[in-house]
Amino acid sequence: MGHFKPPHSPDYWIEFYNTIYLFHMPLFFLLSGYLFKVPSRLNYSSIIVNKSKRLLRPFISIALIFFFIKFIASKFFALEHPLTLNTFFYLFIDPVHSYMPALWFLYTLIIIFLVYPLLHLAIKNNWVIFCFIIIMNSISFTNMFCMNNVVVNMSYFITGIIMAQHIYLDRKIGIKKIVIISLSCFVLFGGIFFSYNLIESNHFIIRRFLRIILGIVGSILVIHLSIFVADHFNKTKLYAVLKMIGFYSMSIYLFHTFFVSAVRIVFTEVFKFQWLSFEIIAFIAICSGTLFPLLMEKYLLRPNTITKKYILGLSS
Image (cartoon, rainbow, N blue to C red; front, side):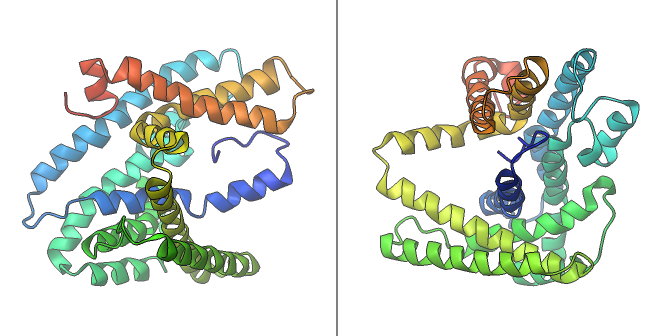
């Protein structure tokens, strides 16, 4: 949904788009930290090897695949992120401004996985590391090599590690506690969001700190809603569908932009279906961006040893 924003999108969609951007990427980084097993003894070479297989291989593979797709597509259609010499070069130093901006997440996550163990070796205490990163967020870093994204999203990554160490995400906390936490997060998010929008953009530090809090609170809200669904709807179609989407989330992340963009181009540029409402086109785009990558992984990528290894980053 965050990658579907065609020209002339309704105002409510733009507001929704801007709102989910405050917490949907923080959620991914927080969960990455939560699932990361902090090494008791630093074996840096094994971390490099592991993350190269899991993250760097998909980064290179997807970059190559979309290089050829965009090279051909640019001959026929106007692309939001066209393939040029500059956008190709930026893939390696600033993916956000490259021909594949969605890959900034993998790029940033790779750096975080390489930097965090060194911080942990030097400081040990994750609360101290968290405070250190929060202080670092008062500095405006360059976008080169995703340094600004690394510093911001390291906050969420370490939050996830701290939550894992304190066994925070207890599946058996009970419906009453889930409701209390969810409502509290919702109210807190709304209040901070209101304040965030009131503060002018030149107040960089205040807005940056509020944004970090919004990312953490929004992530905790989504997590507890997920726990609620897992515990109370585990025999329903909703649970089965969400679980399946979660299982295939890597391919959805890697390939959804292709299908979402294809729907946007077909409906707004090729056939110009002006009689179709924006909501219908958005629904088709979002379903396509979810369903087709899922089917690709299930029937094409995962059964094949090479694609499973080099595109999904999974061991054979």
